[in-house]
Length: 281
Ligand SMILES: NC(=O)c1ccc[n+]([C@@H]2O[C@H](COP(=O)([O-])OP(=O)(O)OC[C@H]3O[C@@H](n4cnc5c(N)ncnc54)[C@H](OP(=O)(O)O)[C@@H]3O)[C@@H](O)[C@H]2O)c1
Image 1 (spheres, rainbow, N blue to C red):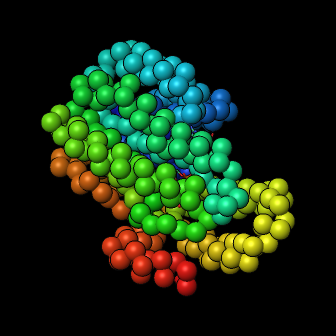
Image 2 (cartoon, rainbow, N blue to C red):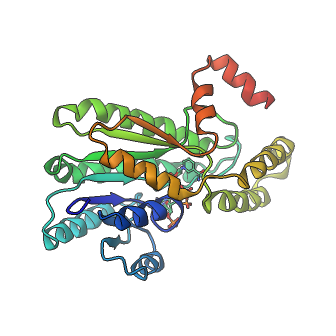
């Protein structure tokens, strides 16, 4: 992998951090983007010469995107590397909330992190990707399904899916594949964070409207807690990303992690059957 450079977004924790470290470990030069200086410093302390923290990159900020691209360009030149082998679009958050009570600004920022920011980053980076005949990777949920109360994660995912597949068509003549790595339940900081944010959200929502959803939300949280003990390590995702980056003929979709197979199978069912499962699970 020597001589190949990749960008991974959202490397402060979870899948992004594990992927950046793994890819650097096997020889890629990795531009690991983070939003906070403390996270850049934590990556620097790993003393991995091929791991280059890039900060601040908040994908909702076009000035950050422009500045990050400049840093990447300069560092490629300094290291005498030709172009970018890949961008791994990983950054994203999301909250648990019924659509009736979901903070629209939060959904907007999720679209910035998962859809609009990555597209702007890609637009800036495409000349470099074309130069290396590279590829684009998208970390996504395991299937396109409407799941109650997690629309802020799954609705942007529908858009990511559309972007990834459209890029496959538009970039085909340069042989730049756009690849989805569809993840099941992965052991990261995200479940605890969303549970904490849900508790805070519940304090802020009007009690009469929260009462309409309280029982269902509690039941769903209890169901999710069962999965928490059995989540897949983020390093597994890193290995699958690495496979997607090194395959001579990469697949358009990879899947990894607990429940990813089941979710992909359910996705193929008729919409009415999926709705029935969602309402009665
Ligand atoms: N965990 C799972 O089970 C699972 C399953 C399927 C798909 N995924 C997807 O995998 C990706 C990573 O999730 P994770 O579980 O590893 O979560 P995580 O540990 O919370 O990591 C999310 C990363 O995204 C960054 N981020 C969020 N918003 C951003 C923005 N606007 N600009 C730049 N960076 C931003 C975060 O930075 P800060 O630290 O600064 O907030 C953090 O580095 C997400 O896109 C998620 O939807 C996760």
